Length: 84
Image (cartoon, rainbow, N blue to C red; front, top):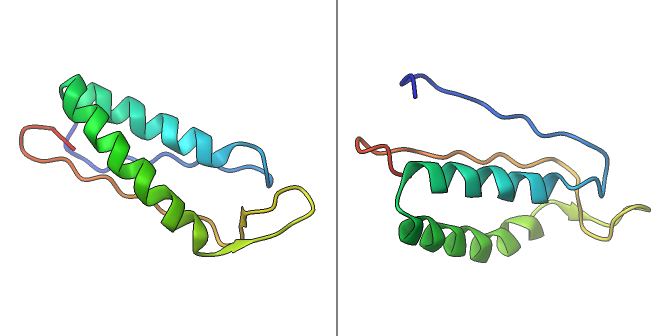
């Protein structure tokens, strides 16, 4: 980590797996930055919140029943000990 802000942009058509890709990125970052037990705890919290987050801005399209119409912004903060 360089101490500077970093970004990951995930884009694609409706139903292309963007939400899955975001979950996998968060899982990777959480397992790299802390113990496995803490990472599993964080993933449970994120997965529980994900349902509520997906409900905002969802719309039915021809390709996907719950497509996000406006996109999604996820921000992850690290503490001094480099833990999420």
